[in-house]
Length: 356
Image (cartoon, rainbow, N blue to C red; front, side):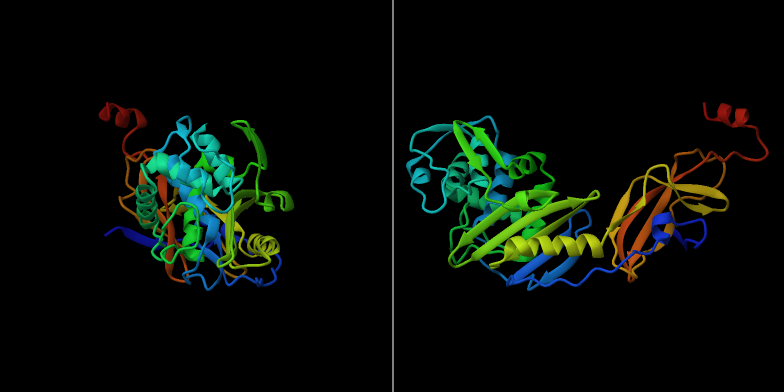
């Protein structure tokens, strides 16, 4: 078992851990039937309303379509539009049967114009058929932990076997935001590509500084759906609202609340002294951030996996710092020896000779 001891209050924790949050953030309410606000890096849910309810998700489905296409397709591929794709009902990028476009152009049409025709064309090309692509979507959902989601098509048209939850859609958004190409496309306001000029339906890109996309949606049965991501001060939050007639304002309110009430405190970074044991400084091998509400503090302990005995070289991994909130572990950071420790009875040169 690794040796563990609590960190001492003085001279041990980073300054960030000693600071209390300044100011109070007002509570937030939204008009959505279901909603989630999530810290992207940690996955911590900062606000939720009916987060586990299975609901129709309309065109926010296309986040999954784009994610699977970018993983399994090639942006430069040429895609020939089928009759089925060209005549798909609903929102459209106005594809014509037989025309040829790159997969990248189709993804712009998918995420900016919310083209149901683009979704079918993408699915047929990447999955071999719409059915095959839908199987890939559902497999990906399971890989992401979306346990209450089922996909029946690549565009979000209403179907009894097509649903998700606000929480699951936040998980999907976390995965999507890790794909730089998807973020680049979803955050584009207007683009001319493949002979088409397309404008993003996501008005948050205009209304709110720091918005990074992602996707709007609407059907009469689903109502208005919206999944978005925003960044302030290096922290990213994800907001999901389902069946929400006031989604633009609600997302802005959620972000104002989340960034104020749960700022992410960066607890450790490479080269920063995090602890001291027996007079030996321990430094963090990596960074770690966790959003903390006012009055919350992280419990921090060190677990050593080796004795701090000479000879010990600076930079040697010696254990981990373990962070917990309300008794529940939320993260770990590796610890390195901060300085070289030589045996007292030998000179540095003698030790060096022994290690040649």
